[in-house]
Length: 212
Image (cartoon, rainbow, N blue to C red; front, side, top):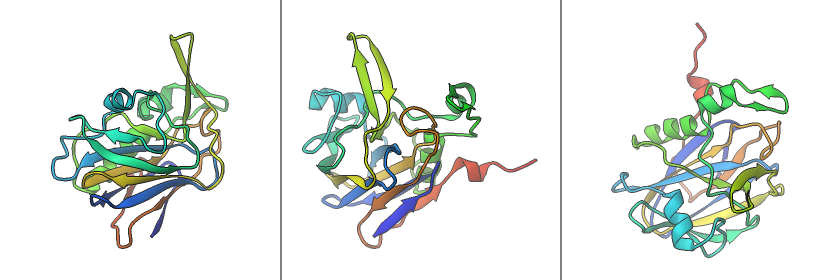
């Protein structure tokens, strides 16, 4: 089944061991943030640092796995059109989008991926803190063995990454809220291809903000 995550929103869903799902950037360039929790023990969750360590690389692609805080694989990448994803940066959050300037000025967003992922996960029954994310389609670089930054995403329209669950998991994905170099100043949606009948919990902090 297909589900579209609107711009600046997040969605959470469950997958059984052996089931596959795909994350697609339909318009190209748009970055997606992804986290995963072991369904039977959400205290065990995706670990950005252990994923770098156990794969021995700063970028993961087809044949690599996402590892948990217990050093166990939770998702495996079985197909990857883009091949460029970030494992260095955390998810954007409210203070970043309020205080950090970009080419069009200060965004002044009420929240970012961390908040959107948390809201979607809470709706799916996961209340643990959102860890640092796999930033799908985000290109990050390291120079002089010291400095790192974000470059424009190379993802083309329709590029997809397919994951297979190594454990029963609750997964959350967001269409990144941060305007800037990676996704550009015109933010877009993210598409999911999911097993038939999957329940999707979609949320956005923008919908939680009420006018006084």
